[in-house]
Length: 83
Image 1: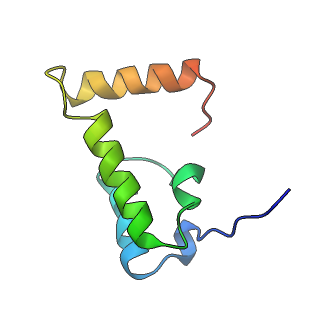
Image 2: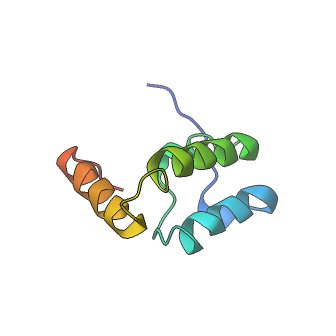
């Protein structure tokens, strides 16, 4: 199996650190997901994935952020996601 190098939160600098901080502070996530870290060698890709996720996941309905977050959490749990 191949290995994909990633940049962890404590090693991030510059634009990648800004994006990781956004994920932890604005999104209130305890950690950056492994899926996003897979793109960490190119901060511009992480940024675009985060923007797409924000656009597709939250704010596109009249449900409100709280209900959208609850639904997202429920579906993630149901799908067996660990992050």
